[in-house]
Amino acid sequence: MDNKTPVEIMLKASKITKVYGKTIRNQVLFDIDLEIKKGEFMSIIGPSGSGKSTLLNIIGALDRPTSGELTIDGKETTRLNEVELSDFRNRSLGFIFQFHYLLPAFTALENVLMPSWIMNKSPSPKLKGRAKELLSMVGLSEKMDSKPAELSGGQQQRVAIARSLINTPPIVLADEPTGNLDTESTSQVYELLREINRELHTTFIVVTHDRRIASKSDRIVEIVDGRVQKDYPTDAINDEGFWQEAYPIYCKYCKKYEEKRK
Image 1: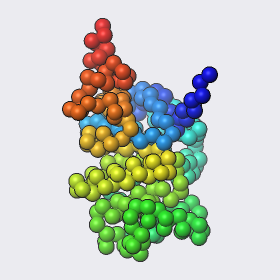
Image 2: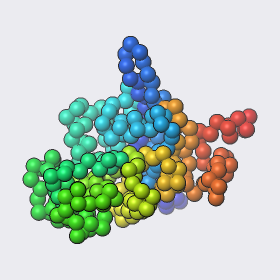
Image 3: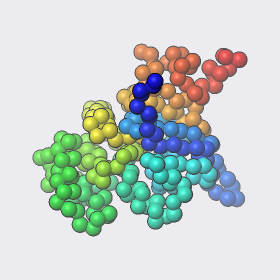
Image 4: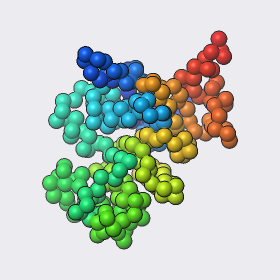
């Protein structure tokens, strides 16, 4: 008898395509199939213009696919109307962007509470307590009353991370979250994201152009010209970061390996 705990799928994308324009059509995504497990920390990499940010925007309910189906946490988001989609986005998704987008007139604590203000108008004492706990988790317990201009770039991004978690989303989407940070701050932010992933079991999808950063995740999906080219766990990478070990065991989309098999 198999006593293994069944894997819970947090996200399933089926045949996702995206086409911009009607007279002149520009197809950005081609039949993307993707499954992400609950609690997984996944990186999406690829060159500029490959479609990785477009895919993240569709997953984040910020854009709609031209065709295909997307199910997140049991909800088929491609069937929701605009009001339902907005509500789902606010309740179920957290966002971290390359720029922190903190409101300069508000303190760190108030910025963390902003998504809950949008949902609940007036945050409850319980939510305020959670915001303080999150700021403490990201190492900013002494900066709660500081405004963004009084914080370093790394500290500002830590506030943005705390803000993404205020509504307890099951999934957090990050688009180049360390693109504006120096090397030391980048390392600290990614270690923090992994710590949150482990402690809160939050699912993370991170878009990055940096393979060294991607190697800190559980799994890497590479998008090239709007298609998934490679999909593999990071423990399949050897010391040189080469693909040979991943070909026969892990990679679902490696054309070179398929050619070798022929």
